Amino acid sequence: MKSFWNELKKPFFVLAPLADVTDPAFRKIVAQTGKPDVLWTEFVSADGLYHTREKKRMLDAENPLVRDLLFTPGEHPILAQIFGSNPETIAYASKLAAELGYDGIDINMGCPDRSIEKQGAGAAMMKHPEDAAAIINAARESGLPVSVKTRIGYNKEEMDTWLPILLKQDLAALTVHLRTRKEMSLVPAHWDLAHRVVELRDKHAPQTFLLGNGDVKSLAEAREKANETGLDGIMLGRAIFGNPWLFTEREPESIPPREKLEMLGSLAHKFDQLRPRKSFHLLKKHFKAFVNGWPGAAEMRGTLMETNSYEEFADRLREALELVG
Image (cartoon, rainbow, N blue to C red):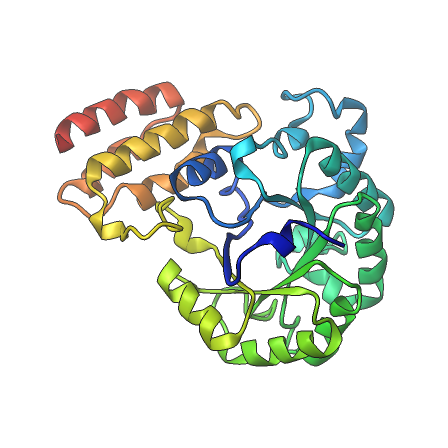
């Protein structure tokens, strides 16, 4: 299938889907500051979208899951990442994403969250590989290119058995997080295995774009990884915390305190517009990331952490901006 993937210049660099991070507010500031080649949404439950289908056009608190799928024109190309183990709900969610204007569907087959696994989704799909083809085919009913994000195995590395199952599904792209589900993020990513992933792709599905993921801290490092491994693209994740400049050439240390605080303020303003779906307290994980690296940052951060509403935060932020000059 001809798609936006074929238009990307290799190697390409993309932003990982991060739960409670890559929401519409955060993606918007990233897209405006230094857009990656492709954006992903947070993962969204296909079952949840299906069971709230009568309210799919009500983009308010009555249908919060659809609100999670909102995006702006400046975010293209963007993929809707969904999870689930029921082909019927996967098909519905994928078609909805197509109606909303997404460029592709990405299926999460690697998330280690136990509540997701209990549904037979996320990393649990590696334990039931026979279901993977049905899920992928259901997503393909959307008419959009379908990709998958997964890991190198469940309890142990099992790329030689698991990855060919996916590659034989004629995916548009496959992202491999170079850890097992058991390892979570507790050990360094196994970048030494990336060459084998490339070999498997070349053997089973040379037309599938291949991305690597895990521990990449900068755009410069991402370029090195792509050159060393032969991967088509690199996905960056946790390095985006407090650094929407990640996909630019700017070094975090070069960004002045005022600019960091102003960016945090912009994020908070956009985040406030997502309420009541998003609790204000979810925003606090960004405070430590943005407010650090200069004298007095710890005290300033502590003051911001004491706030319990956007209005309180905005007042404290104005005070903080006066202090940094």
